[in-house]
Image (cartoon, rainbow, N blue to C red; front, side, top):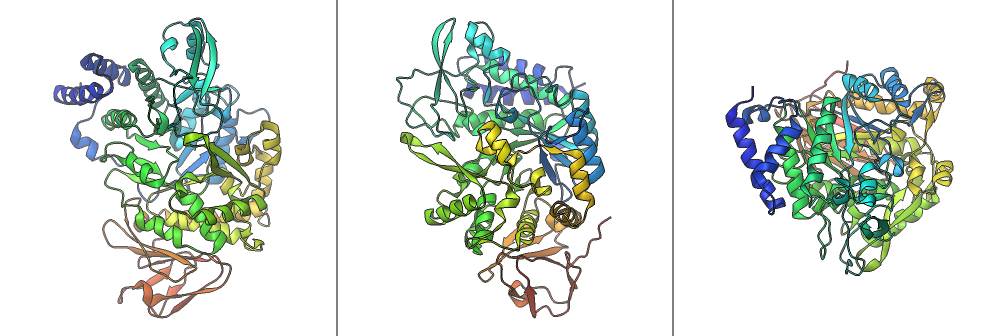
Length: 587
């Protein structure tokens, strides 16, 4: 039985938000509909003191990002193959799994959803998702900005039938839409002939991905029902895909609008009051100062992607210059209670360039783009205000991006790759590792030729038996990367100073070195994480990092003890050290 005061408090807060979003509708009625949709079986709402007591994350939380169909085995649903791979090779070294869209889809590798309530039968069914959710903390995508042209809702739009006829955003093609900011270069409006006449539908990402009209509260209500269903299937972390583009207003940029933030606040309010511990992650691949706004006032996203990290990390290791990476870590504010960053090096998308705007000089960007192309990568473009085209992302396997420096490929690819992962693992936030990084997958040129899309270069499908064979042979590149990375994770996940909300301070180190100081929430453990980002040996003067006298210090990675806290510590090319005053043991 829910507490009447809790119900009244939630209802009032929802009504206040809904008045801002839908001033022409009865906010009290909408609030009732939303509560009924989110708790369809009169499920338990928790009180405010219980919300504060929720355990959201700690240093042991690391995520693996994968498609449901990345690993294949003949005669077995891919989701079952994935689960088998996880239990055989990962076990609980990584406890959080993000399965990219596993719904029926018409394009974009799952991001043009046809039916939000079913699992793509080529991957498996809900029982397979639930089985993984029983063993791992499961993250799934809420593809909330757009739906497929093949969906039931859009077919209703074409036939001018309810409810779908009012679910998609349309605009007059004669309207000036020059202010709109978008991540693609194709036309913004896609023409369709419908039973109600010719209509032009907003299509931020492609002509097959049609944007929803969230000015219609029924659309919001549909997605709240979808979230409730996903919770029932074991999903606990919700990645709001492309959410920055959610609300459109003619005459504006139609990105990061106030109404978009209000909807995220509404979803956060609902999830906070749910008895399960639920987390919102916003996927907003935009300049860093804009991205940070999605924390709100500790009332929007629990977690935001650290989108600036991948391109600046690539740049630092490509050039041997960590200046811009240091500026990022110095400028990112400490996440407040109930909020943190999702740190990553690679994902199913490319390495985004928008987060480098105003951060990395254009000459540095151009050098990086040229190097990635020499390493076999490709560059995708976007259309900015006024119709000008600009580079949007670098499409390349992250392991291949680590081939060499501006001078070209060299013998340090694995060490350089491991340096990038060690830096990412040490930063404030939750680390997320793309499966193709974990497996050191090379560029997928066949996939690009097959689909015609640059992003396919980093979305290869792999044979389960072949993976097993490579991981069983310690001489293979795949096994070397896999084993070194899992070993590093095992060390990382037992260090309280690597808690997602532990203190972080960027060290003032000489050129070629990047370092941060982390301190546990209880202030008992300090870790000085220092990496050589060059292909030359460097020397760390320990006196510069101020190790406290009287404590014993170790490098957690090598196990080497530090006898002289004011001496010099030589660092091989791309070597990382985690110097700690507490030596936590892995299981």
